[in-house]
Image 1 (cartoon, rainbow, N blue to C red):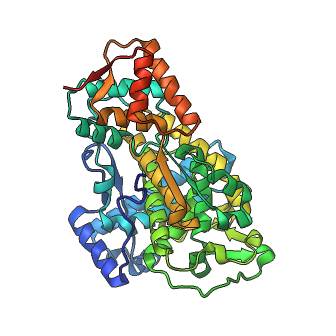
Image 2 (tube, rainbow, N blue to C red):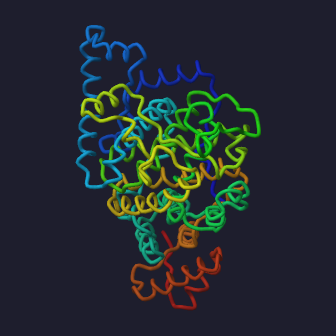
Image 3 (cartoon, rainbow, N blue to C red):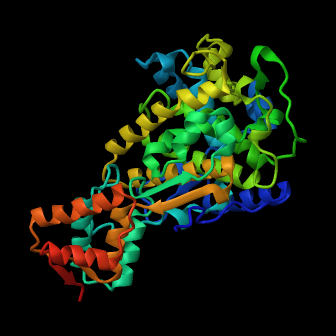
Length: 470
């Protein structure tokens, strides 16, 4: 079974240790997340947020308190918000226009999370591109069919690589693919109490793409315990929420993660309509945020300890960044009037509604975005983040031991062939390739894990020649 927790979960830090780690990272790398091997292609900028004192000086118009460089930096930060805000006001989607403050808040929350998590520097371990990238035109954004996969391993076979190296390159190229791996929750006990439809859905073994929306729609709820301290949670009609166990103390890392989780699904709700840089920033913050909630809530009470979960409402957070507030106010708009949940245009929504309403829109977003980035590194990184984040969400909801995770028959069959240094001969007809592909699809449909012996036997029976890698 693959290790879905790779590269690892987040260790515990004291606040002082964490702030020093963050400062050291920024001093060395600046305010940018760069994906290794893609230095000139994909970078995610991170804002250097205003300090409390800077915010006070800015509001008081004491611009002489800033250096020229810092003043220019803050002005650029405000301009980006201004441009984004005006672009959203011009959007044809009513979900955006009526709730524009919520989307600005989502972007701010992602930036806060990115700034908080940048110190870890773990992207290097997770996203280094596979060495065969230039040699294999492997689609990243659409489902790789069995016949397509067989064509890919033919290409790998002709590279005359050692079997173990070919297998590793195949797995690195496809191992993060949402259509190449599948998973489920074995016993969704906690979810069954309040979200029976979701519980039944995620207990079935299926590809990650099919349940991507579930992970995002449950994201705001998984870290709900944190929100008792730092976010708006209430019972229907405004009554105070109580929990069945004492409330633990969370560090700033976990709080930033939950603030981001609250607004991520709302950001994706209206569909694709923004820059790739912003989308990757949102997904990177979502991935790392879900990892932090999973790591930070492993040994403490979780959201399942809320009494009468179906009576709880979640409030849509409002922007707190002074630049964002200033931009909205300068347009003569009341912030409170445009900070609502996109599905109902109201500031409050039952937790059960959020779990139901954001599943399909988020899944549709995933499919649309992956179709836009079928064969590029943006699609590769986006789907890696989306896949891994989903499993962290499930583990936080039901426990790591309850997460079952495996590869599809297509991924396994190709991996087995490469490990044994064989591949369909170059002169194999399309019809014969399709016969083998159809059999792999049958194995997948009946949940059979094909063995090397079964693959060789089928090929011999169907007169399909397997070449040996030299």
